[in-house]
Length: 251
Image (cartoon, rainbow, N blue to C red; front, side):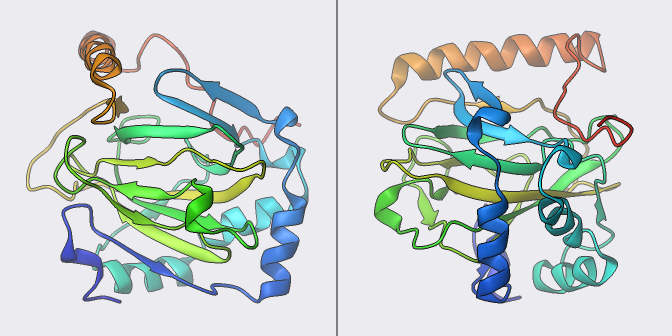
């Protein structure tokens, strides 16, 4: 697995049968109804997310933070070769997500930093828990090694699979549209580091592009990137407070 991870521009690998099947099923059945989650819907994306973990079944918070255990962190470092990573207990853009029929994520680069812009985002951990999920149902992780205009490869969101994906200036990725009347459920974590994976410093906002068959959407989204990147050059913290964090004092 260590030799598999760095093979591509978007470094990645996956682990199947991560947990005992009974536990993985318990996590899946604990997922909330999508109506209780935040819907993020635009030209960029269409999905349901949640980070305020104390509002849901306790097992969901337990599995989210299990990936932040020092032993897990050390094991992931051995698999990826990425050292000096730290988890994010505030779950900035992490937590849980649910994608229903018609939901999708367009090709994008994740925000390069944490919420306070102090550390670089270096690794995504995506744990899929929907049983009997097949490639044909969509909702699969797409990795664009040559950028958002070239063919992509896919990691199917199989039940009880953990996908690991490096994040940097070239880690374009997306999620294919869910094609069935089911919920693709995922537990998400992000690791950060004081050092970027690239050999130079950089900053970029979450940057979405159109798919090759979406030229008009691509132009609109490129304009969106330029506008938001320009704003962040003037206002380091941005002008809109990102609510996708875990406020542990909030019930």
